[in-house]
View (tube, rainbow, N blue to C red):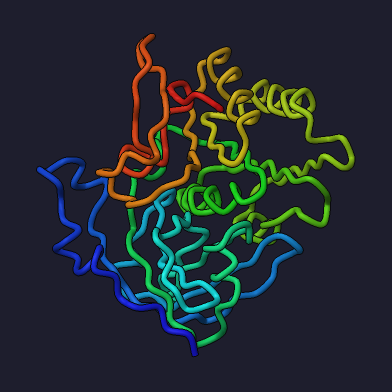
Length: 292
């Protein structure tokens, strides 16, 4: 059985307390937790879904927030930095938290080796999550690849609040489409598009979205996973006066803000400003976000 050790960086909930009172209600409580692996199964050729038993503090995570996972290499060496993982689902009743991830580097490749009953060290939840305004009756979520993992919780929350959800699920090919069952379970209208059948073009998606806007079925956008999708919803949001939020993905180190590894440029009131994805986000106003 593999055991992920405790890290000195995240010692207790108190050690992760507020920094000069900054954004207290958005970022905390947060803590380091040792969780047991319930399952870690392949979803398709590229992605795996890991389910962990989680203590109460981890179950307080909001849609759009993330955890920092301590990863151990195949030769049992602790990697220098934790790996940020957005929340795919929090199941309070089962006391479980789920992560959908792609195996692309040393961190996620080591995660892929975890088996049932192994332990994993997680810290969090961190960051500013999504918000859902009471006046919104219908929302569109537009995601691609692992970006769908981040959008799943806000879609579930919207459904619980009686808000209609239209989910655009994009992937390279039909075999890489994910999360249809989750969106079906919450009663979302699902539109799947892929590169392979040439339906994922910006022009095609724009036509879909314009039709929904014309029918009054989009009061807000949520997106993650693609710069071209971000640029599209920015354009439509500005054109029709529809608000939106984007969860941005970025290489991180500390996850708390001091290291400034995850800084990106944003446009606010006509000026360029720098913001940290981990501390100031990862969720931002669509109109302020700048794609790569």
